[in-house]
Length: 351
Image (cartoon, helix red, strand yellow):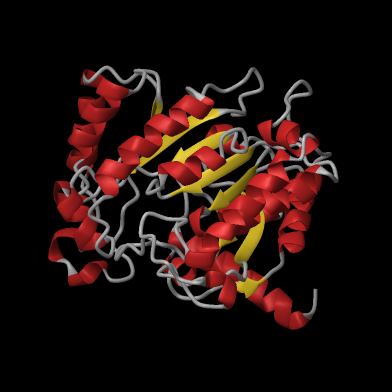
């Protein structure tokens, strides 16, 4: 790695660290310094779903089908119709050129994803939701990414396995789902066998999720809002968010089921829902909890996240321009317990 590339890499790590990305965040940079382990760091009897599709040629075919969707892009619910294959940018800010901000072991994700070797995270540039409070806005909206090939991504996946990560965690994957599937196909042919974590904002098209059936091992979606007006206000007009996230969660659950750690404490399959509690109830947390309790198993994994802090354009909206209070957080935790949810990931109360 030359000096310029090294500076860019360190800057990307620092940017992510300042963002506080992921629950229970400690330090990405410190995590990268931990001793590499022998690979792969998975249970010996585990086989990711995509391997079966790869062996039959189906994985590559799915990737090519998804790639064709970029002709007039309909990968995300905006269905902006951008001709990304011709070099035009979609609403997300991407052409068909893959852009990646960083890849490394991440020690700030859920414990069952981190283990001792870290979650093998690939931070993809740009985003179709474009939230005004995004903690990672430099990457999702600010263009902090480098052009990479599908082969490069496959090599990244293999490298993360080689250094002892427990999974491949693709962050903000929706607009690059074709690239991810094609990279998986290449990497699978070279020995990749880690579970794939699809770390998404949750705003997904059912038709695209069905193309990922058998590809994704762990779905890690946000459930950001229960109210379409709030979604529209804070996420660039995405008023269909509540409707589509509910449809998406049902499909994700159908595909992978309830997330339960294995005997080694690691997660290999299942649906892991995240919800960021926001000040003044704008995320509609109680309604989110009610829906999960009524429509999914009571032992559905549900991470109640307390780390909201105003970032990016949040200070332009007085109601979300402050951090969460301890009372706001503890109140919704108790509400979730009363609703009968039994698989809660509860964080420390905000300061």
